[in-house]
Length: 190
Length: 190
DNA sequence: TAATATATAGACTAGTCGGTTTATTAATAG
DNA sequence: CTATTAATAAACCGACTAGTCTATATATTA
Image (cartoon, rainbow over all chains, first blue to last red; front, side):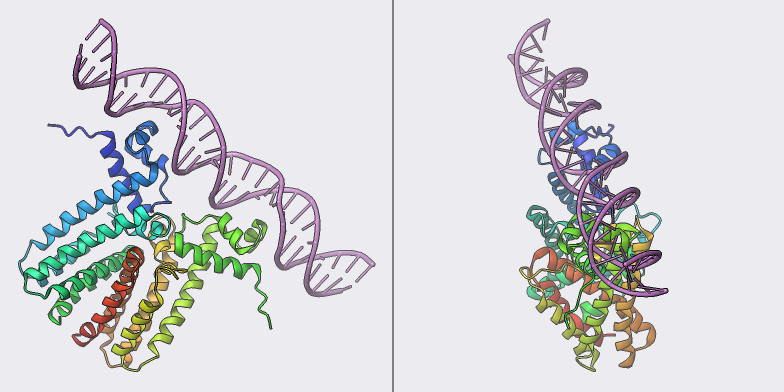
């Protein structure tokens, strides 16, 4: 039952990885083509919209993967404090400068293209919204007020993205660890 | 007393703005040249290291400006909670999608170049460290334990960067507002 | 087998990239 | 007034960019 990877999927996977590591403009189509093994003709057959369409589908692909990871992480505990803290600690553990085969999921694309491509901006916005909803729902289920839970969803999303950015820039997972540490304070105080 | 702007300063200012808005790879030298009015010969006279050197000095220039802003913001109140909350609220107020003549100070460069240019990575790391130190010092002055203050400095830096990223992506200042709102909870609980 | 989508293959183009080079102008010193 | 340095000006370069094009396989279906 060998998973016969088709060219389209390979392109999306390769592009997702490279966009995360090098950003949108820092990643050329030639590099994506070379690493995925697909020829240029295939790219424009599957993605007639060119680089932007490829980036759009890459963002959506990445978002789905992250959504799954958050869901799995938060299901580790019914207590939202423990669940969220554990999730961020998992991120911290998985993070090491050396094994940095992944960048920050979609932040680079969001930063680079928000002003130049409304399509990509919206895709990133949607992705972030999805992350926030998962956190919010976990808090609502635990008895938090809906409005408060929504705010905390945004807050947690921001905190994680920022901690990731700092970890990425400094090459240590300390910022993520510190973020995890503060979770009980934040959620208990609310 | 007209400030006669020399070509070097104009280049740094223009480059800083464009790198923030479009990222490192998304900003070409030609655009920087055109918007600053300087010719190409001048660029390589003042920055023999080329684009990377220009980006390095732009990051340092931007960092100095941000450091000043944080210092001024935090001096608005002796109470660290009020001071920091006020600072973030100021950021939120200043932020509007329309008047988005500025991007996120150095985040785009940090994300795009951390893996490809150790020079730029370190410059961003240094900048972030400076921000954190200001927050930490404010907390230490107010009686926080040194170790705790340091952690909170990193935490606040991460929170602000992440909130900025979300505000930038969504086009509203709501994420920054939410961050400001949570400051008392975070600092009182520590 | 013939006809028809589906997908691959890669040469090719026009334009832009960062960077180099040479020439010229402006400012300053002797 | 001349010699020297500081700075500007822009033509030019090879490499690379995203994207187009035509040709060729490879399935699928009749």
